[in-house]
Amino acid sequence: MNDSSRRTFLRGAGLLGAGAAVSALPALGAPAASATFGHQGPDTEDGRFTLAVLPDTQYLFDADRGDPAPLDATLRYVTGGGENIVFLAHLGDLTENGQPGEFDQISRSFQHLDRRRFPYSTLAGNHDIKSSTDDQRGRTPYLDAFGPQRQRGSRTFRGASPDGYNSHHVFRAGGREWLLLALDWRPSAGGLEWARSVLARNPRLPAILTIHELVWADEAGQARLSEFGQKVWDELIAGNDQIFLTLNGHYWPPGRAVKRNDAGHDVHLHITNYQDRYYGGSAMIRLYRFDLARNVIDVRTVSPWLADQAPRLNELQRREIERTGPADYFSLEIDFESRFAGFAPAPVPPARPAERQLIRGTVAYWRFEGRDGAPVSAVDGVRDLSGRGNDLVRVTLPGSAPEALRFSSEFSARQPSRSSLRFDGGKKPARGGYLRTADSAPMNAETFARGYTFEAFVKLPEDFKDGKHSWAAIFGRQGSGGKAGKTGDDPGEPSATLSLSDGAAFQWAVFPVNQNGISTCWGHELALREWIHVAAVNDGRRTTLYVDGCPVLRNPKTAAAGIANPGGSWLIGAYAYDSIVEQAFHGWLGDVRVVGRALEPREFMLG
Image (cartoon, rainbow, N blue to C red; front, side):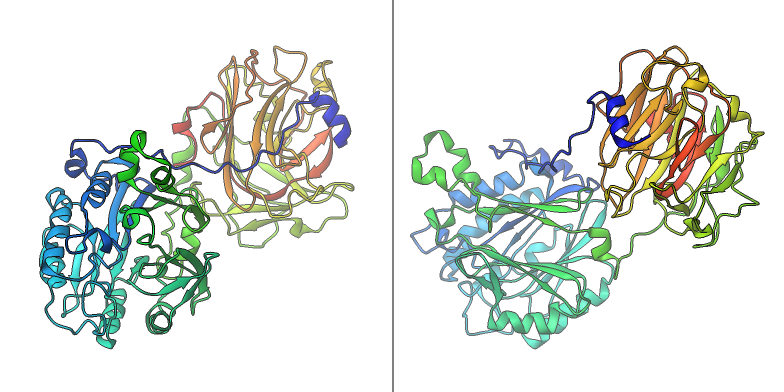
């Protein structure tokens, strides 16, 4: 069937290509008054968590000219339980003059975190100590107030350099551990060696480096390494692939840059400092919200102190509640699994036994296990592991090579097996290879009157949307609705097909036993180069299409029971119009299972 006739058949029900929505961060508000966070702690297994970053607070603690109120409000917000904040990192210049009285004041503010055992790190900036010295300077008011002795009760503190000015912390978030290095204003050669030794002792942990000076930025927000920052890059960052993000203060305005390390991977270099803004920066914090499922870090810059006063603020103050320029409010796209693969490859769970997938009502179960790159045998085909005899035989379209349908070592980590089939099909003319149920397969006579579940793992290649693969099918019937006695809509359509539109959206279209026309479930536009699980589920009354275990929107409410039987085979990886195969699938297909009842999502092969 050509695309224009299909559009007629769909009667204007085509999908619109929706733009990718940007997930907004939660609205900032006053934190909870109680300290329940201190008792329960953050959800360390949630794939969405936040690292709070606090830059230069020096003007708030400047002899008799400061005011701890903004910092106190920020620390209350951090421990208030919102946004799943797992750690707070201060970037140095806690005080203006490094005097004992100033440290007494800011130390009292930080006691709010100590009492709640909330994890945090600090480091000395050039205003906290004598700026001409490195970490071998000896005892200072900073070290007396914020040295290693203060962290003894911390659940994340893992130790400090012998001088006490450099520390490292390990916090758990998103179901894994993360390393944070907090380095001095001027780490010495020994300090940098200490940092390298920490990385060597924790070789599988992704690392965030905090330091007071590393990069500076121009007015456009483009960051560049300072002279000292270049030294730190050369001697610590470039050769340690674990470091993927660096954070520093000291300079203003804020900015960011991306630089490639020796392994060829991106390192994100960020400077954040607001001491030049109203009220010494109003104790603004950067909220780095990690979303491991979306492979993104959403970054936001806010002042909880000003937000708390919002109804009473004047125009100047309101402008400072939240910074929304491109250097203050942005998102980083990071494929975490790929970025960390060099030092912490994601563990691949072992294959799950086929027997465990043979749940009640299983009609057929196919997994595609063969030598990577080897064509599927035209003699052996693929055996039905359910034992019900619904074996598959290979069909090669005219003019196509055996390699057009071959085994692949690629697989979805969620599927039971550890292999797939690679289909290299197309249309105009039809090309590629596909599978069909053997003539003797009992499934060929099945109408699924009591319900059904068809599920599979699918991955689409980058060129799927090139116009040559629209309406490629994952599975369906070779026989048409007309051969099953249906006269409604377009009788030449298959009695059942799970196809993909030119926009890579699933369409489950069937002629039910109780209808003369077609019942259609529509999915949404899919991501390419990613494994996706799809399931079409019918409970004997209604049909629901699921993508990755989630129901899609456009599922019909009209009753639909069973699938009309035109006779003949079921197809895996091919679409047939008027019983003639017009094209083979283009992409990867993992495990496929058919069950003669409606499954709950928890019963899918997702594990």
